[in-house]
Image 1 (tube, rainbow, N blue to C red):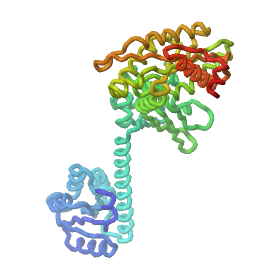
Image 2: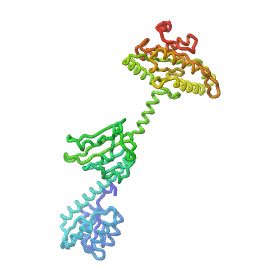
Image 3: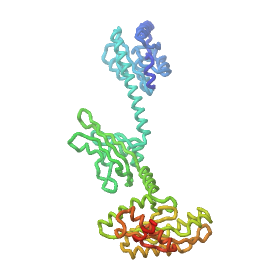
Length: 441
C-alpha cells in the first residue's frame, strides 16, 4: 500500500451472518464517511479480503461455518500486510475475549453496540493503522536511500556497538553484514591521520568525554579495512542525544582515494611538461625561490643553467614536429642523466631548459655540468630514421654572486645564454654585469 492509498476514503469490510446487523452497520458507517463492503460469512470474507485493500475489518466472532476467530487467524497469517480486525461479540466470558486477541484482533466491542463507542474505536484504529503504515513506508524509503547511498553510513547504539551498516560501508571496509552488526565500533573503525600507521584515533570521542557531545569531523582520515589495507576517507560522526542522554551515533564516510588520485594528476599536469614529463616553468617559478631561501639560510651558493638548443628549428622545419618531439624527448633523457638526485631540470619553453644545481655550490661545478651538457647534446640523435645533430648554448647565473632573487637569477642566466650564442653557439658563458650593457645596446 502506498502513501497515496491512505488519502482515499477508508474502506471497511463488515463480516456478519446477521443481515439486519450488517444493514445497521452499513448505514452507520456510510454516514460517518466510510466506504463499506459486506461479507455474509467467513468463507466469503477470506475471498473478499484479498481482492482489495481494507482499512478495517469488523467481524462477528460467532458465525456458522468458519467462525470469526478462525477467519481472523487466517487473515493475519496469510497476508503480508493484513488490515486490523475489530471483533463484535455477545459473549462476555474471559476465554472468548482472550481468544479474540490471541487470534490477532486489535480490539473487541460487545453487543448491543454502543454507536458512539464504535465511532471512536473505528476512528482510533484506522488512524493508528494509517500512521503505522506511513511509518513503515517511510522507513522502507529511508532504508532504500541509505542502501543506495554512495557514502558509507553506520549506526552506533548506546552500548557503542554497530547497529546498522549500509552496503557502501560494508564494501569500503570489507566486511559482511553479520561481521559488523553487534561489534564494538572501536573493533571496526580503526583510524589514523594521513602519513601515520598508528590507527589509534577514536572516531567517536564523544562516547568517552564528560563535556557536551560534539560531532567529530576529519577530512582524509585513513581507515583500516578488514584485510589490513587502508584507504583515505572524509569522515563524520554525529552523536545522537535523547533527553540530554547520549544514545548512539551516526557515522558517515566517503572513500576519497579517487579524488586524491585525480588531484595528484592535476597537480602533476600543472607542474610538468606534457611531452617530456619534466617539471615545467610553473614548477621552476615555485622551486627556484625556495632553493634561494634555503641557500640563504645555509650561507651557500646555488647555480642556474639556462639551456637553449642550437639548430633545433631546422629539424622541425625539415622533418616535422613528430621528429622534433622525439628529439626533445631524447634531450630530456640525456639532461636527467647529467644530474644528481638533488638537482633538477625543467623545460620552460619549446627548446629551452634550465638546470638548478643545488649539489654543486661552486662555479667550477656549474661549469663542469654546463660543458657536460653541451657534450652530450652534441652527440647525434636518431629520430624516426633521421640522424639529427643539435648543440646547446648555456648561460650560468650564480646566487648570491650576481643575483638576489629568483626572477633576476633566471633573467641573468638567460642573458648569459644569449651571450654564448653571440660568441658562436655550442658553448657556455657565466653572467657578468658587462652583459647587461650589451643587452641595453
